[in-house]
Image (cartoon, rainbow, N blue to C red):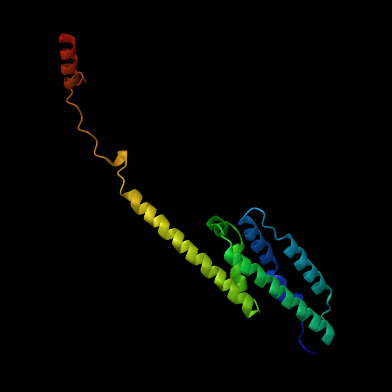
Length: 177
């Protein structure tokens, strides 16, 4: 008997990536909705769940076809993700980066792996551009002398009573006038 697994096993580790990718795409702009794509994927996953893991040729072929449909859906999602701006805060605080990394490293479909790699390369290039802009801004700011960094003026000459002699001279002149 052949070692055969249910077709859903191939996709199970990657299904959560759809939610992370959809959220990032929708966050890129008002009015962007992935609802239709979610409904279509849910229908595919439901059909995939209904396939049996018997070694029957027709069921196996149907399961493989459904997996290829999910591959296509992921390719579409990655193509869209590649062209929308993703905020650095999103990359730093969500599970988007680990989800795309998993697709890049472990997905069976070469097209999905290549698109995930393109997305990561795009994020890296954008982050490097942002970092260069930040460094340039910091360099410009370093050229500004802040008041706290200026040399403080020399203290006024004060007598034993703590009163400035220069102030007394000014007051005496003003009183004598």
